[in-house]
Length: 175
Figure 1 (cartoon, one colour):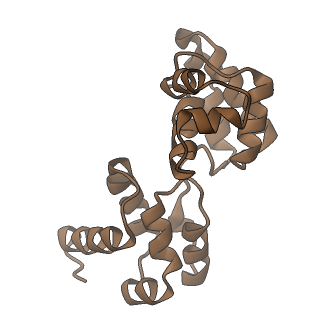
Figure 2: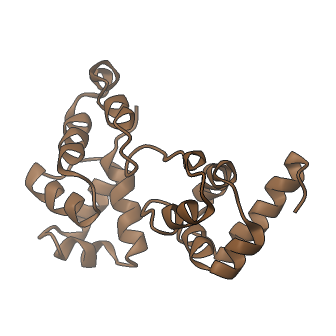
C-alpha cells in the first residue's frame, strides 16, 4: 500500500504554487528534503509533519495515524489496517468523499467548492454559481469527475464542464 503523506505534501505545495525550497523554508526543511518527503523516500519527523498537517487542515489524530502508517515497513502496513481505519472514520482529507451523500444542490456545491483535495478547476466550477446552476451536477457525477479527471491535474472550471458533458454523453443522459 502506498504512503499517505507524500502525495498530500506534493498536492498541497503545488496548490500553493511554491517551489520545494519556498515550501521547505516554512518548516525549516531544505528543498531537497521536501523532494524526499514528496517522493516518499523519507517521512518527515512527527514534529514537522504535525505542523504541515495542521496547515493542510488534517485533524491531529489523522495526522498521527498517517505518520505511523508511513513509518511502518511496507509489508506490515496492510496488516495494521491504519489506512482503512482512517478512511472508515470518514475523514475526507484522506479518503475519497462520497459526494452522492449530498442531496441538496447547494450543500453539494458548497462541499465541492470548499474541499481542499479536489482539483482547483473542479472547485472553481462549483464556485461559479452560474455554471453550476446551468450544469447542475449530481453527487455521483462529481465523484466521476474527481475519479476520472482529477488524476490529470487541476485543470480549469471549463474543463470540468466539458468533462461533465462527456460523462453524460457516455452514460446516455445527455447534457
